[in-house]
Structure formats: structure tokens, C-alpha cells
Length: 79
Image (cartoon, rainbow, N blue to C red; front, side, top):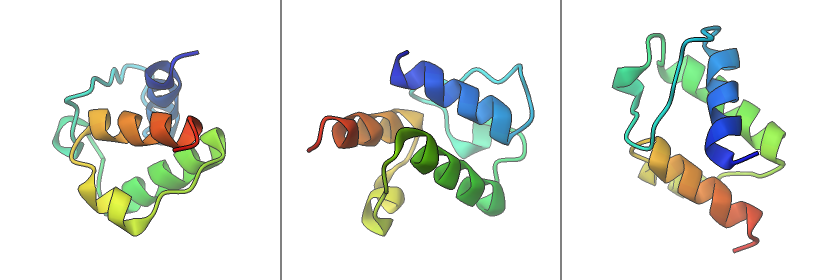
């Protein structure tokens, strides 16, 4: 399964909304309920699902879902 598909399922689970459809340009402003607390839950769920860890620097640089996907793919590739 592609990273974006898996990530979309995680978004649907974390935000309890099966209608969520994410795109690379999606930001927190585009998802109802995406606040600082849900962001922590989202990141920890992503880290657990993909067996990765983000640094604080990486998290601060992520401006949209596309940045998040790029970081996940880079970590999965071992870079």
C-alpha cells in the first residue's frame, strides 16, 4: 500500500471521519478538529504504524501532508 493511502487511513482513524481524503497540499486548516492535541496523536500514530521516529526539527519543517509523506518515505528508505 502506498504511503499516502496508509496515511489517509490513519487520518480517518485519528479524526474519526471516514470521509477524510488527504492530498499533498492538505494542511491542518483543511481538516476539522486538527489542533495541537490531535496533531500529537496523529504523529504518534504515524510513528507507530510506520515504525519510524520524527525529530522535532523535521516536525517543525512539515507544512503540509506532502512534506509529511516525503519525510515518511525518506525514513522508510533508510535515509
